[in-house]
Image (cartoon, rainbow, N blue to C red; front, side, top):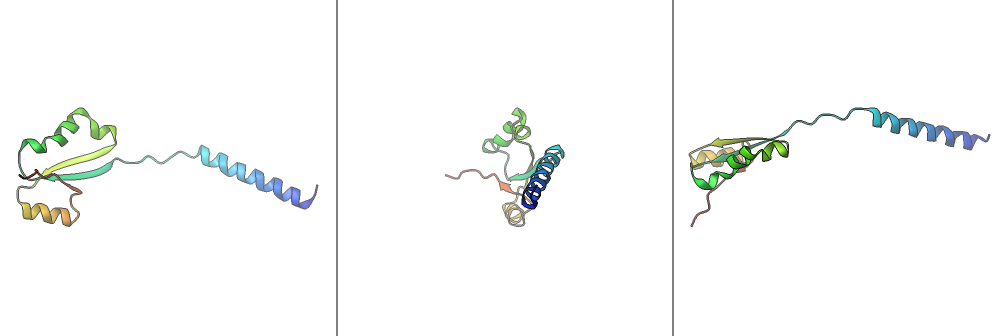
Length: 94
């Protein structure tokens, strides 16, 4: 058997071993994505996140969703700009 053929055979077995080892290694369990949203008034337009929570939409898509009430618009803006919340639910003005 030639030296090149032997190296090729060893490389092929090595790569197959890596493939088998990769397939047998358990996949890491991912935690739910954390999502924090704020709302600034108790009104009907803010009901959608509560409805989604009740029907289980957040669990279905593996989201850990917190809906936080912040009544002051300046505090809400500071929380959004500071990165403490990811989403600000806002009522459409007329």
